[in-house]
Length: 306
Ligand code: NAD
Image (cartoon, rainbow, N blue to C red; front, side):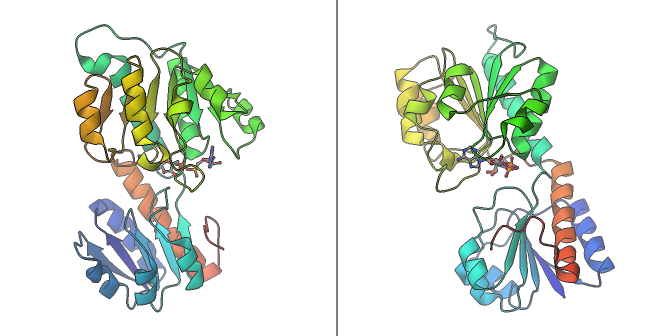
């Protein structure tokens, strides 16, 4: 069996060594395609592989067509909108992600952004504290739960909305469950986004929703840029001078945000949420283990497609 790691943004060396150990222990060969610049390089590299590990790399119909022996693709990370699940199913390929492996990294970054914003981007003027503030967690998955865990340490008053997670799960964590998403935004001065990008969530964080936030509202996005309606947000920041937006995913209209809303907007230069050595290693090794589990034992935990 041959496993390929195909990453435009490579894993850390120590992660690759961990993946190699998992593969070699299973008797598999490991191949590497890093920092590729042309799709053609990926199409050639997948021709004879049985398993593929990617990060944010696009895995579309062309890739599945080119990968005649492919049995499984694992996205080392949480979001999997870079993989065409229908095409995978049509080509009889199993797709998995590695949920939870980078959640702590992302949630810590959410607080980094939050603190920077509530301290006025360190401009020398007095800011506010997180203690006692109402924090709204929009989507209570792996990252959302870690945000709640850390928020408790800050002494925040924590609320969460999730379309699919039960209120018992939230209550067990000492979090106030919210039934209607609008109520989350009405209630909380700080809202942190942890939604996956789906047809349902795309641009769902829009003018009307964010406009419900109380005075001096702060929106923190470590999820995906697509879940926010950027045009709406640009308009809203214009209409409401008290609102701020901090994000780990540079918007398409980044230049407009920077130009129009200095002191109320910040984006990391590139997506940094999962960029820690711990997350890198955890996700890569989990991907390798899931491949071995699937190919040797048919284990389908974390399978995403039918
Ligand atoms: P997860 O799958 O564990 O949790 C997602 C949660 O969203 C689930 O609880 C689900 O029920 C909920 N959800 C789905 N649709 C919803 C809807 N319409 N309304 C409300 N809730 C909904 O994923 P996670 O590990 O917590 O990651 C969350 C997102 O963060 C990922 O999908 C990814 O887009 C993003 N992410 C970003 C980075 C980064 O580097 N900034 C890294 C990892 C993940």
